[in-house]
Length: 167
Length: 264
Image: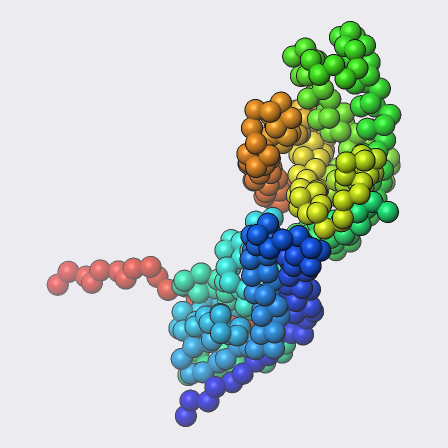
């Protein structure tokens, strides 16, 4: 019988960073308008900063949905409705925990949160769905590239994945 | 209080948090390099008031230029253009004279990160010094703080640029000998390229929007150069350790192709 196991990530303050950044961008976008400058002069920064601000606030709100689902066929990484990586168990080549070296290139990562493809100096491009951006990342190397995750109970998670792979 | 001071506080706090956080995260060494931002903070005011201003005044006297004529000879304009890169890139390396800071020149990786921290600290101090300069202008001192978002964005990016330029120079210092001079001259050249847009705008050659493009291109080039140098430095023996690695599982590699069957 196919029983799906759900693993939660390590706790982190990632939601606070992404939410704070969202509030800051929203504030920077609307402040000139609130200060009395006409909308015709401020609509562009309002749309850009306001839009990005709302997106980051939504990301913070989705933080509790970050989870790893393990069934008989695959491991699925989820973050709200915007991120969904499915890794067939037979494609997993290696699992190891290590610290990663972040780069200056822009990506969706900040203290306590890393999502989507993130370039690392020492590991190349890694598809991340993790509550940390560089420290103690569980790297899952597959035939289609590496994934980075941070399960709270790492050893139980690894044992469960190995057990399902051997079935 | 002039509005620029409010925006300066926001900018300096946000830049320190952003670049300080990235310094900690990227280096993988926690707060090891963070304190180096502090000795570099007063250097911008020092170099502007005690070095650049007297040199510009002296240069004007040498070129026999009456003040505020607006018709400076090209040679003097070149002198003024090079004044900031030459003086600022030198003063940013001044903390390496001290024993505790010089200890970071023991490995290329440490030198690059120490240079980055010193440059970011210099950039934070420069943001404060520029805010003081803007507040002295009657034209700008009465404007509300939220009109200085251009200042905020530019200063945040310039902090990173100062960090990358000083890292390049510090990398040269670490190698010693002629490499020190080579690193310094490279950082001076990069700094001059960074200022090209602003100079062309001041001469009325390009618009304020077009003036941002060379700066943006120079910052991207700087980041590329820094990443390359860091990557090369990390491959050298004795690089700071970023932590242990635990291998949980490794699938045995299968042969890439099977042996052909024997002929029958």
